[in-house]
Image 1 (tube, rainbow, N blue to C red):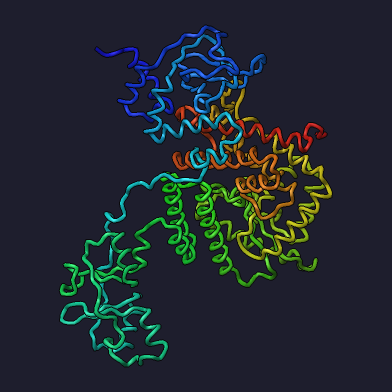
Image 2: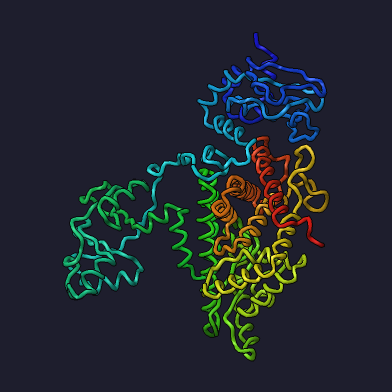
Length: 638
């Protein structure tokens, strides 16, 4: 006879982490051991400093308030599906908080002695235990938990088993051939005419040798062998052949083993059968698909924006693959940012070719905002600026006209390859974002000396600039000027810190997500405004206060701050973790819904995703408290 109560328990638990990671048999066994508790409003579950129970708890219905003993301030609210009381069981210590029913509540008490063996068997469950242990600490990024937390970025799960050595490879069947007696001059002409890198030497219908571009360079171009000699003189022979059913991994291994760049495929894999195809190292690289090196090479070879747009589709596929395989988000952002920068650089090179003349003076193309920070993983809008060398006053407007025309070409092609135009026109094609070095010093100095709301907003965008193309010395000199002004007018940092606190808290009373109240995204959670921007803005003002340049990435800024301020190391490392976790979350949501990932429909998130997202909110609150105190924002006269 079935135990209907345990069935109901199992049916409930399977919807929430970590129980959703258990198989049905494990869940049924565990559910048989669960104790159901009923708590009246205000009833105590456990008190502060009480020895840990033999169970941890899951809220079935109602809510549990967590407080410090003797305090009326509620530190947290656990509602349906939330787990609490787990950390003391793992740490073998007394309860740090008091748990009290906030309303009439039904709890499931899960015995740790029955649950722990399941955690040891199941990696996902074990990770949840570690995350839960860390969630009540300031720093889930600590050495103790590193590599075991969502988005921490230090380990990757095993790759998806799409086994490469079972993947067939396409090869060229359009063979270009010659005989042993063909003169080198004639075969070279045939190779050039057909735009191929090798030619097969045939005798009696069978392959006997191969001649590659490398043979022509090493043996003919050096003068070692006259071009009137026959093919037999320079061909590589005997040949190494393989069957046509060659797989990708086998092709890679064969090329590495024999140190060759071309494989000859025959009907049966032997030299005694007719050749049916030819495989080059380039073919293997293309077959590998979304390989960063292949994409980077393709970007550099692209001759127009339409080709670059196709390549960027490959970059997005690469990004999706990395996320599917749980590659560390720090590494992912570096690779994708490099490919983004390479795409922008190639657009600039192609645009320069369209200009009627060379640039009149050295210049620097600055990418701003998320791309400047190396955090633009999705195709969002473009923010950029041009900085050009100083010229005499009577040449300034003519010089600016040249760079505005160049910027217009660049901006158009960036839009073609997938970067939308900036709605606020913060682009180099706008005269307000195209200045000489002297002018940029004046502009940024004015922002710092007279910081109003607009100046703070512009500073927040501009001060994350990255040099994508051009003269680095111009940008370095501008950075020095910015830091000099910031030191002369320390009140600017207070205003910048005030701006960083303008973004509302991610959560409201009792941990509820604060959602948009009206407009197109009503009832959606603004991940960028309420979670990412507070972390990003705080990092910017803190790193600027230390006069550190050339570190734009938010996570890297916090890691540098942890070095500079050992007393705040734990908090800064937590911020680094949170910034990467949020970036990964936004990227996944953006790829899933084919948008920027900014607005999240909470109803479409499962409980586990909500828990992971909420885990970063405590860190956001703490870093905002730090900058409020450090920069005396409360004393700011608005």
